[in-house]
Length: 133
Image: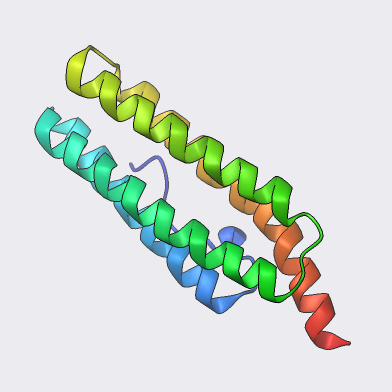
């Protein structure tokens, strides 16, 4: 059984962002499959894909925040930047040292769930409230 599957509780109510979050889940699932078959090279490539996708997705999210004048934009952006740094660090560790892939997977799943269900939902609630006024 997968550590993460798409579930409506991850929806934040902004269709564009929800679609991008589904891609995140898909990439994490592919990483999990590569870990199961112990394909280190594929795990590294998939984590690099996740990093590049995260960079795109965060830019997309932040552009909406700027457009909608989200008051916690700077804080949310710092959270995004922190994750990108951590992912880059983990890629380097995987390439040149040993890392337990299961620890990496648990980190990715925990981060995704926590960030979407807390920070992204706050952002979406703000945008949806603003749009309904």
